[in-house]
Image (cartoon, rainbow, N blue to C red):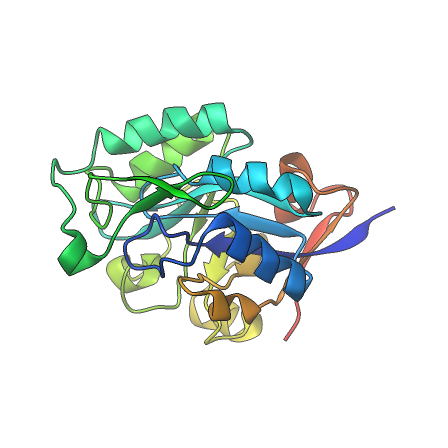
Length: 248
């Protein structure tokens, strides 16, 4: 029997320099529990170093944490990438890091890039500048994610900046998409019409939270047999009755 799982698959932690410092595992999970969110995706800019502590902290919660990352392509398009487990995500992170410009972060100008443990203690800071475009095209990212068994979801495609539509003006047919994400500023019906999104492509919406108060945005519901990466993929692909519904 399928059950409804409220999901927010685009949440930043304090590793993203543009996110608040209080976006740590405890605060994120407590806010998710308060909102009734059962599945979350941790998607920091170009890094996944805070996914593991959130997953470890989530063992005390009834919440599934999906390893994710918001990658910036050479065209400055933001793409959400998801993998089933941390070992594959670590391999992906190494690949992305090898294509980022060799530039150190300036915390005073861009913000801190804090790495935490499962108790939400700051244990280190990332020196690599994460707010940068990798020297990988959207097509190259799409192909590599597909080969590694991951899921690719272009982020906030309705925004004018850092989106497929804003940067390219269209959704390339050769991208291997699992779904597309729209922002809170547009409804699914309008987005499908405005951006010519096929009925065969799943649409989700997420909070893209950089601050705890932004996690109150919750509209995506997944209908799954149980919360897992495989079940989410089936829902995105509308297989075996699994599905995604955006409630306005």
